[in-house]
Length: 74
Image 1: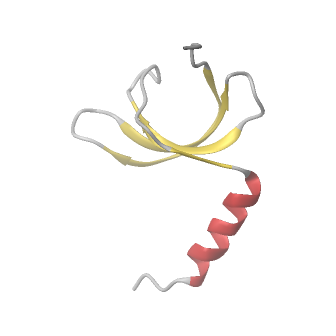
Image 2: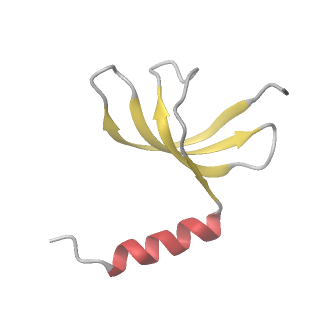
Image 3: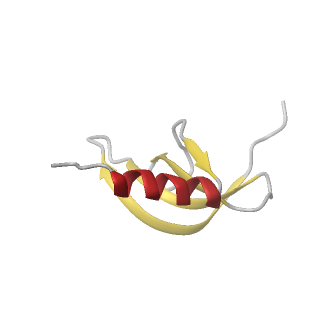
């Protein structure tokens, strides 16, 4: 199996913290030297280990933003 490579190209923000010191983050990440995509997942403090997450294109983030803006969270 080929080695997975990644580079966080933009740290957008932290969504939450875990008791073990990991953070759930929204970032732009380049996977295997490809164009960066938006990414939500948990990272260890050194950004060397990560959990499973979700990767989104710009178009998917735009659609997600529209969906979130349309719901009432009260």
